[in-house]
Image (cartoon, rainbow, N blue to C red; front, side):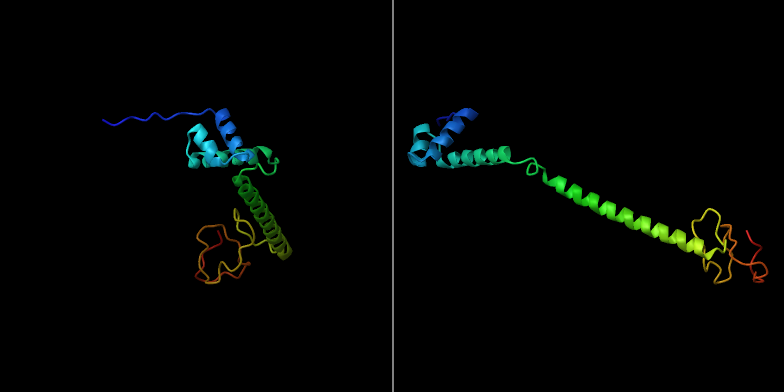
Length: 144
């Protein structure tokens, strides 16, 4: 029958030794691979992993931030901008409501209710006090 080939396993220290032997340049990578009985493709995989690990280890704290952190910072900036815009709009609406001084507001509804009786229909029980005394149309029920 067929021969079963047993895969050898190398410790991380052995892998580093093999990769460094090829990086020294005193002999070709092909010869290093032959002496340790590994394929050149495996050698180059180990070399890339070693270089990537070294890059991560030597990076600064700023470089070590995961990519999601940058997205989180951007999202927080956007939220902050939207909160400021909402605050400005709320402030502008409050000023607009106070400058009118008409006191024509719906109870429980924020800000003045303008043009709610343009069609001269009922306010449907929302507590409307928009119409001045004596300005009630004939088909309009008594104020809520």
